[in-house]
Length: 573
Image (cartoon, rainbow, N blue to C red; front, side, top):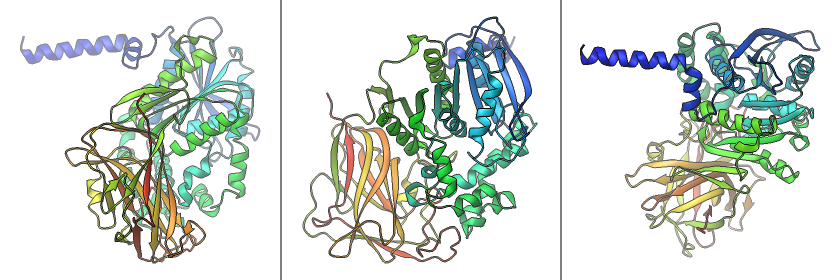
């Protein structure tokens, strides 16, 4: 027998073993406790809603007698194996839970896949969830012990339901938040990337409906190319037509209600008073996820209400496969074992677990944020130093042209290309300033909220300033850590006697170790389009504006204008 034939037979034998013992194989590679039960599935159960429509639902159950807790998962992305790709993932999750002694109820949300009605984000989820619970309590196998699980929009469906009923004993919302206005309108701007890519994904999933996985993938893989014209289109209120060739009602509604006091956002906020939740809550997020700020606001709100949740934040962005396929499943099982099965053997001692990037280590803490020393790095000419700048230093200048907006590279985008990325290309642009420290002689561990105080001026009263923290490696590559934006209007910022403006940029949060030999870099620019929509500079309503003005920007960094980057540094114990 040839070596090639022998290798082929060996691989074939391994595949046969994996298929024959796939439940055990999945447990091994996903670090799960061993499966206990075979699983039965009842598909396409029509659960009635009060208005007469039905939501299509599947029930996964252990093939065994006995009383088992229930996990409810409500999704707009499909729940059957041939539902456009994501159905495969949900089916996989549901089976893993059921193998370990849980009933799993998986449901298409209103207007999605085989459920009736029209889909409008978050609007009907509370009532539909409550109607689903009314159906659930009538099932003979339901034992009164209920948990909620799921990432992203599946987490939003958790929040709308958990705040409406004390039935929920435990929940694990991951890469999500109850602060929907904050997510869509970060920093008084608008996340055009999220608002266009999300409905485009729905369209791609719909094209792959009832198709095998390999047939469902091409629309998703071609998505970015197909939606690129929408990001350049003005006015943005009609950018949705580049995706769907027709107006999208919820996209238009978002842009028609640009203030958190608008009825649509007030109604959403009222339906998600998370401090009233009685469930045991474990929040999971990613340092590069666009939901991170909202998730940490959820944590702070629960903590202030005397209900501190567990918190896990990894190095993930929204589409990180390790987050979706392993960590949220394992943490979910541990959480539900603790609060639905009263098995406390898997619960970790400390409630906060953070992944420290740079050294690639998990660390456990008692609370978020952990105690840290606010360490100030002042801007000098092209450098960052802990010394206060000299009395007289020339300011720095650049020009921002919204016709050629500074692009978003990696970071907290809703994109497959989010996360940690090499920034050297964007740093070479003339509309990006860089301030870089000397090489570090010892590691510097930064955990907490990063702030940037800038003294600026602009030739326009309406403009943006963007800050990004980067880690420069010894080979010269610059990798983004965290960032944020400040939208300047005539009534924002602190006007100085000389006419300059002092602004504070919330650069979000991180856990990152700058290693010895590395450098700290701050980027300053005026945009990260389409993550934050480009500022056209006119002050007109951005949804309908089509005019553009070039902004000439000035960054001051002298003793009277001590622009400074503030890092929360963990002091070694």
